Image (cartoon, rainbow, N blue to C red; front, side, top):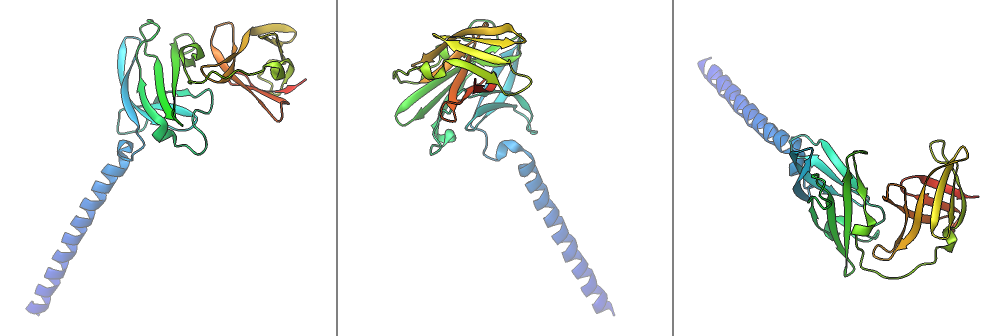
Length: 235
């Protein structure tokens, strides 16, 4: 009887030790898995200054944007920038093409701006955004950016009348002789220059606030896309 009790106690002790070992392993896994910073998605880090305060951020890069998260165990978004064009081809890896990012104050307003450098196919691209305090977002600045190409392009395919396709868009846009104008209920709501930027190898519509919006044609020239306004169909 005593022998049986001793064996039973030994078995229970083994089970307890095994359970303790399992709990330790699970805790370690939860600590590593619960901190998103350990998962390999962070490409860079920096400090964004805004309103006199400095915020440590971690940078993630994908094909369409760069996102800035608080340097914290929980993945919380601080801000982001959207690329105005496809900066890498479908065959390229944006993670590998990315070279650097800085948050220096480029326009002297006291707030951080964003500058990102990519390299691909032997070319270097510098993309720059300025912080717009009134709109509370980063605005792409094509005149500050560089793409390393000087080819020219014919803008005549963009000219004409373009009809809005959504209720929250202008009714139509007129493009002619390097200018554009947007109309809503018969009144002009915005407009400015419409031109090709050789440094970016892309076409931009510059609005009244002088910010640039990427523009391109789709569907064999029957659809116009402007990054700040959406899609329009040829009138």
